[in-house]
Length: 150
Image 1: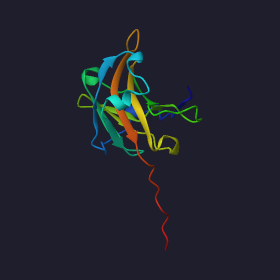
Image 2: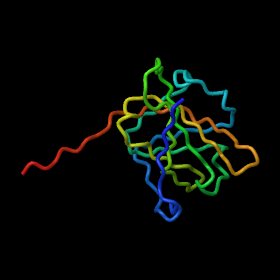
Image 3: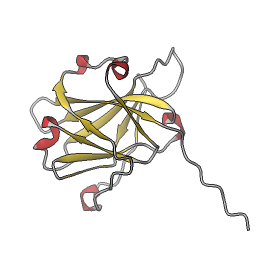
Image 4: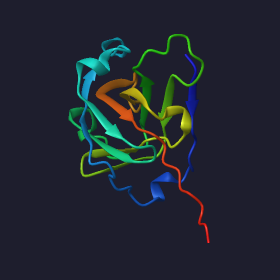
């Protein structure tokens, strides 16, 4: 499995909370890494977001976090890759925590556009990480802004 990680600023806690653009709210539930397969997206509702938009995750596994510092949000492709090259997992690094909700910005890169991803949270402030399954999202087409013509 090829993974891509986008690293943000170490001072992320000082950044103002991000707003939810998409209005999508996923409900996270505790589970194990083997509970979610690449076909899980067909068994649960799939929410649509655009690249660079944010969505929210609620539920028992995020209720007591306090911050986004010890949480890693991993988006793993749910659609069949059939051996195709490219990213199969992405770590979403632009996250914030407020009002007992984790807010996650989807990566804004061409490689994730028009793909379905399973959303998993790894809570790493414990002796052994806890895994939270939050469902699936479909990241739509990347938006491009045309240059001014004038």
